[in-house]
Image (cartoon, rainbow, N blue to C red):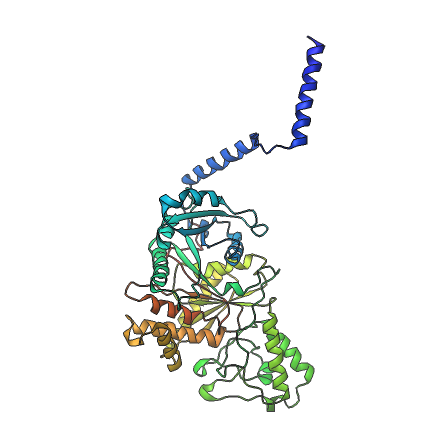
Length: 482
């Protein structure tokens, strides 16, 4: 206006016309923005700065590589990984496609938006997404091990689903699955195998155990896992609370079903209750669950069946079976899970299998570690190790493995894992979730033998959802400042 008001007026009208046209048509054009460039530069420089930081156990956090066939169709894997976000570690979701690279790479890039999760994933899901094209599943996973991540933001733990159809799949497919587990450990990464997680309702506010795959009274076996209180009142209502081979133990209150059961029995009165309880003295153990013999026991069994079918989300127990020292990985992951609101109401319970002559030493050591690490575990609860597995257990394993136990490379080691499968059924079949140590997939063990062993440790017809995991041996917990 100071130089020529006519030119200024024409320029103002032209600018307003262009602005109105853009606002009206809303063209799909990326004009670029200074904040975007600044965010990119800040992220780039921050990753470079991580090179100067020294690694320390206190800063260890799980970086997950989650193998999913499809992040939408197999949402249970993605939703479980989201419950580990409190560790503030990177999460990479990956899909392996098999095919000819030269012939299909164009279609592959067109069909996959590599880098980030698709827009139609569940709300608040965060993480990166990678898809690779390789000649085989194993080759694709090996590529992911070597190339996934950037700088210090790399995965150190692989999360994979359990191959449910291993008994009907070809030997090549099963062998490739076991080889992937072996490659993961050779790569120096931890392994997590999710079994039965499809049964979990991930859209609830709190975790509720899925319905039992069997009726609560289908098995006449003794259950000593802690469905009842270890008090005089609960002993009068149910039976003497004793463990395997007559070894008495104290058990904390676990499971909302125990409290509700006490209320149920108290409402019916305590008169003549002792006459209704059948105590089995075989091996100095008492039946916690048995076939009902009168109306009170029938109603009590029916109530417990309905309670477990509906799920006990408020006081659900996560049983962690401590078998070996893998750097604290199996202790740390359940604690990280509990930090998320989905698992926050769960009770962490550690179970320790020990020989008779090492019971006091193992307990004092574990209690000291739990106290120093300030982990919210109950226990450790002692489970006396058996000398030999039951004949039925051996027969079932031999049927699954399609070979005799004596034909396995290390029969004595297999027997120990079979004994653990029996203890899982005796102590943890009514828990909300089991965490079990992963057996090492050695080269001299056939894939069918190894998969049969995993099946025995996580049989979803008898056990709750199970996480089979193993660390790479590096320390993940410390109580030292330096």
